[in-house]
Length: 144
Image 1 (cartoon, one colour):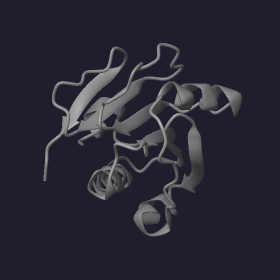
Image 2 (image 1 turned 180 degrees about the vertical axis):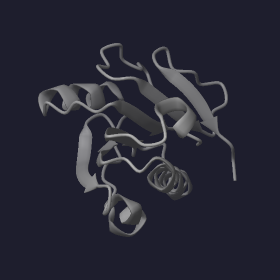
Image 3 (image 1 turned 180 degrees about the horizontal axis):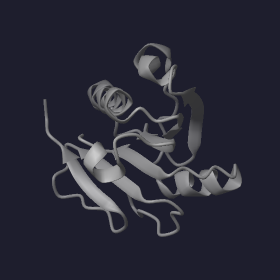
């Protein structure tokens, strides 16, 4: 993902939602974490909330600009249930988190993309070229 053209050379607060529903295996999770590392390396966010989600937010990790660059070594993915990305927007509201942008990493097999996102949302989809979110911007991660 090349984000600077989308959100500037650096950003403040990002929320990154990582799909950990039952359809996500180790290979997809590794792809997601590779993309998250690229975000850390390219745009240097000042604060990042990483939200692991399935039908609920199952894990919430916070990083600053210094700790985020080591996320692949420190993160603890959680989840494994159903799929409902709307839980991320609801969680952000419930916790009064106000990121500049939300980046959602998913396989795109979702029943409802939601329509109450309070920040711009970028959907990054793996292994499902037919999926296009009904809200925000959709990009597809090329298979490696």
